[in-house]
Figure (cartoon, helix red, strand yellow):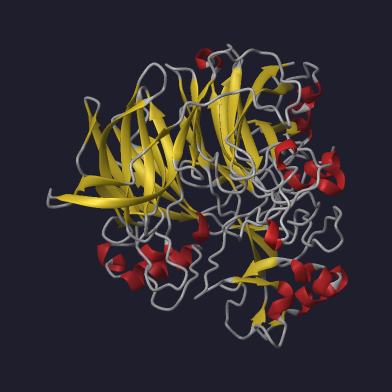
Length: 625
């Protein structure tokens, strides 16, 4: 196997080496040691890899239990989204936004036997509980304030404490975090609610359970009449009791910049902060007058092992923020861009089959959704699922197909000569013209000619060091592995069984990522939201990563269609037919929770995966072959 090319065009904050399927050696040789390091994947013992460690081992991945939140009434309505595990009660928790409740799924009887039909199994049962429609919180003046609640977005569990991040009924208003004490059956007793920022999208406990962080995304309403600031809330927990109010880390007074040549006056205004961030490679896309704090929208948080530092993904802006939790400050680091001339992707859905090409002048923005972290040699490394996302609202959209850039009725601009040649050779409107890119980048000198194209997401997962320098990227593995195994079904949407219909967008969309240790080796598990692929990589050494396994719990032979733009995705009057969703397997994996063998109810490592479109929670058992 030949190593993948290892050159990326990155921002000044992200200079690194990239490794592909076979792995490339750090010392610049031809990668043969890296290829030898992956030799154990087929179940053999193999030889030592470049780091002198034993090789990755092949894994059995089996469905051992599955919960379904309902039938046609919940399909496509986020009935099983974010998942967690409560060890004391041997239960899996899942947010059911369709019913506005928390599913508490009993795993106490889980065995190590694979289920007979993983596509339609419904053997696991839930004892759900609901939360209030409104809560009373303390405001900054310590006065009582009532928040009318909307949908729950995230849950986290530490010991016997549950935290639920819930947006307000008007998503641009401040939301809240609800705290519960869990009993031996996994049922919750309400402790208190604490106010958070607008659209609290993710909540996480620190390692010792003495605080939680909340990513307040602060999305605008669709007409941009209201655009709240993004922020991070920290809620202290003392002797098991959350504080009445949160501390806020914002993107104005709490921002820092890493440079020996800057002093505070260099970023004491919003215009200066925006200029510095743009110069570092952070993407800004929005209507005129948008501030830095409105642009940066926290998505997902992971802590370092010591709990003193945390990392937050800023998805739309293609950046990660480093949170100093002692100083209560944040530094934003741009992630740079993936050079697709060094890899291959399928950028059109018109041919309805896998076809991969490299394009000079085409770049991918990493734009991670879920991030997680682990330790290697005492240092923190961050793993990212590089889904991609655009700002696409009624009042402003950065999203455009390449064909519309040069359409006189659309943008009426031009492509550089080299991009125009690539466009023509690819099939024009039916080729590269189908790919969705951003209008916020590509025409650097604003002369009406796009000298580069920037697509949403990187169709990969990455590993970053604690300074947000790129250590590893899976390149074009996901598309090629999925196509090799699934054939024309690869890059399917999660709303119908029609292959290749996401190639023009963000591919399979890597959404969820988790990391865990099995028999002394560390593995990353990455799920693709649209196509349903689950990829496993050995990341024991972040500088010697190896692909291990692919699994997809979806039956592509069934016939169904949902529309996720509708209030009722299964509306027959609109031509939708959901009759075979229940036998089609898992659709729309949104989150993964790894359960270590020592904590598992059946003694083996587990993956708990929430699938928001099918409304299912699937329990995978992961063991060595």
